[in-house]
Structures are given as structure tokens and as C-alpha cells.
Image (cartoon, one colour):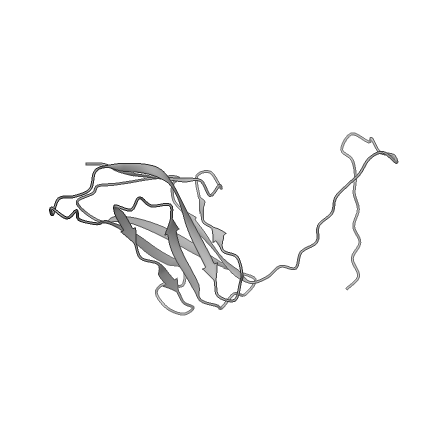
Length: 145
């Protein structure tokens, strides 16, 4: 198509020594994720539930796999698949579960950075879920008694 692009310097400074960079990208259908808070807290003796709200952009009808990255080896979290026209279309729940020790006891408390990745089917790269409170993908998980 035909496009018109106008670039303006806020301070009115311009000339041959000024350079601008312009990137054009096609908007592609994908699924984006958001969590309510950037700090998630739980207890090791019961599953920690992380609710992820999903938004399908540009008419995306593909499945998306939502997974948690950065967990301690003492904890596990199964990925969840979001499908159109099903209960998981707009919201899913990730469950962080403690892996019992060999002696049957529960693992120690853990705290650290995590990431929630939303991988839209047919896309080579996943997108990280943002926190609604900060609009950034920097999340912190704290599991303590």
C-alpha cells in the first residue's frame, strides 16, 4: 500500500547531522498475557495459583501455550494451552507445586524472578506476560511458609 510518514523534532532541531531510525512491522495475530501483580506469593504446602488474563490481538484464532520459566528445581508448573471458544480462551491458571523431597518433606522457601511465556502457535518467538500494575514482564515469585 501507499503510506505517508511525517517525522518532526519536538525542539525544532534538524539538519544533515541528525539521523532518525524508522522500523515498520506487519501486525500479526498473537496472544498476549497479563497478570494482576508483579509479585506473586504462595506457600510450599499447597499449590500457588497464578491467573493469567489473555488477549487475542488482530483476530488471532490460534492456540497458545502458556508456561512458567525460572522456577527452582524444587517446584514444578505444567504448561497450559489456551484454545479459542473454550474456557481457556481469555483466562488460564498456572499452578506452581512443590516437589516433595526424598524423605517426604516439603522443600524450603524460595524466592526469585520468573517469567510467564505465551507462545502463539505458528510463531517462532514467544511473548512474555506483563504485570498489570507495571506493564513490564518482570515478575517475582515468593514461596514461604
